[in-house]
Length: 540
Image 1 (cartoon, one colour):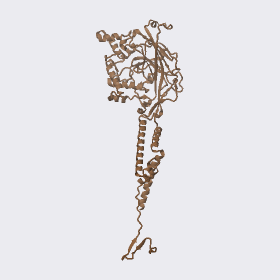
Image 2 (image 1 turned 45 degrees about the vertical axis):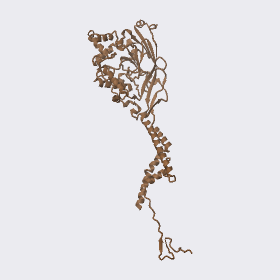
Image 3 (image 1 turned 120 degrees about the vertical axis):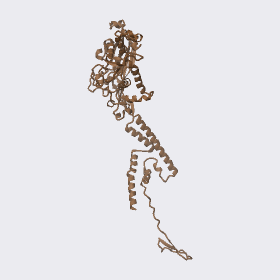
Image 4 (image 1 turned 180 degrees about the horizontal axis):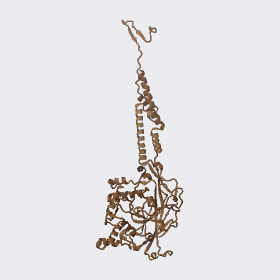
């Protein structure tokens, strides 16, 4: 029979067997609850990974998945993060090392917006042989020095500043009288030019004297010395550029908006026609092959009006009894204002206010290189060649310093390449990057025989008996329109952010709100969790 225990309390009861001498009393008690220690950072991290919008994270701590599945998701998430970091690093390197791209401008420009190129002509006749016979003086100097007069010997030493000579000879330094000798022996404008064609201008109105590596030459359409040089820093012994033309044109801003057609530097007329033409003469009675070698005629250089011509670079020849026609294509490069905050080394150019030249007012790469050559040669040889700009305290090198000059310029040239790494400091001191606004002229030259001896409208007897031989030069723009180049940003800040966002979205599902979510969970949310935990602990 079943015994009734309903009268007893649910919290305590007795069990008594009929044959047991003693009573066993059992008391059931409520088990105490175990309080969970607050761990705000762990709980916050678990909550974040369970609710985040980033792909893959919620599977890692989900108890519904086996440890193998969760481990697989850990590997996938880490792989995605690593690959994403690698790709973002590549984008950063590209943005940091090559932030600049050179592309064609959106529209074409007319040649009216730029000046006609400056044209510099240098005759290969240095001393007129009828005035001074350099060949005879050179022979006497080395064959029998007693036969040459002191005056001829001094003139011979002065001409070594221009004439070819395989060895150093003469005094180490030249004086002002040597410069005057070069001017006196050089062909005059009247002897070189037979006719000029440019808007009814005469040859003396078109050309001025310019001192170059090849001596005194004739230049058309170049800025005056006051606008090209910092005259306060330049020596006063002789001039590098003659003429006093005034110009409102600058390399950076171009012509003013209100400038007329007839301005300076002169603008080029329409394309395809004869724009600039000159007829030059070479007197065969003045030729001296010992001074300049077997190549006779003229050297021609087309250059920026703001640059001093350097006849050692980018010239073409005009032979005797030939006409050279040069079809000009402008090469204009400008730089967007978006690159101004980049360092010059990254954008590979200087804005005008960023690079100061001691002798030149306008910064161009060639002006900078010429000034750098002058400074390096002065340090190396204690003097400079006569054609290089220099200060009043620097001497002009004579024929005795020729070997030193050649060696100094060779050192400077090698320092720009990897052939002589120990000379990299010279390049660093020069630092001649391109100008951010650059104007150059490419020429396509064609030649044809040019003979005026039978030309019926030319009664010149010297030309008729071929004692003075003609050469012709024609320069014109090949096209009316040209397309300039523009240096601009390859990646701007927005482009870099968009690239990084695309990579992170592809591999992790990351967005701007994901960043807000991370900041929220590990700042505001974590702070609230810590405060709540501190309140619970204090209540206990």
